[in-house]
Length: 309
Ligand code: NCD
Image 1 (cartoon, rainbow, N blue to C red):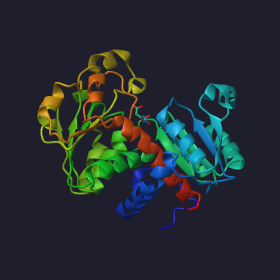
Image 2 (tube, rainbow, N blue to C red; image 1 turned 135 degrees about the vertical axis):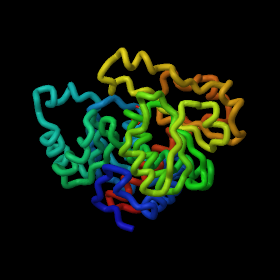
Image 3 (cartoon, rainbow, N blue to C red; image 1 turned 90 degrees about the horizontal axis):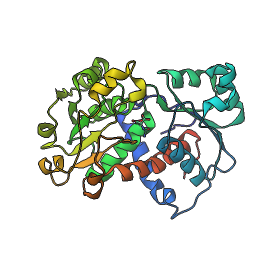
Image 4 (cartoon, protein in one colour; image 1 turned 180 degrees about the vertical axis):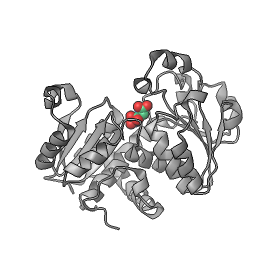
């Protein structure tokens, strides 16, 4: 399988076979991601890290991944310190990064920005989240986490909870899980339901997601509970945000209803939707999930650069 030079814009660009291949290769990267083994397959390569939106995990795990492979990073985490502030277009910023580096990682508040960036760059462009659109590398690390914990992706009952309207991670994940025939339940406030377009994508794979507002009932026989933050920054109206924030809370009381081996995942950052008390329970998988971003992004960088371990 050849990924050299490939852009990673949406999980929809990948077949199940390709996803399985990436996840498998990600397993090989784990000891390197932990610093137990050493490699410099990307020595001499430079990554441009263009973050037009706040990020902790995605940016740092990409940087860690590039460093662990022996490569180097240029970039910014605050676009107000760049010529964007002077009115430069995204296209021109990307053209520059293209000439300064061998791969570009871009996060942007506008849906479609990563696809646009890919049009202006010859080097591979990796979408690190475009507005309420998609987040393919997060999706791959989410699938990786489910695979590592459950030893399979299909044949699981998975609940996606929270802001399903604006949450880009759940848009990518609902598509990918449907590709594997996973049973899906969507739990959200009425105004933050999964977009119709994503539901249609699930149906395209023969999956009929159940939509409900009853979390206790939904988690009862679930294998995975995937929690998301209400995406405050995407709300056109602060009053609407205040109305829905705090609708759902995952706490130790809720854990009384669940199967012993239920795993709770969250792309993070969490705000109030998971009580920190849950961290101490064996259900809490979100910090391990965040670590998994490193081996999975190492696998992706290695593959698109055409330098195999
Ligand atoms: C998510 C994102 O940016 O979409 N975070 C992440 O990448 N790990 C989720 C969020 O911001 O709520």
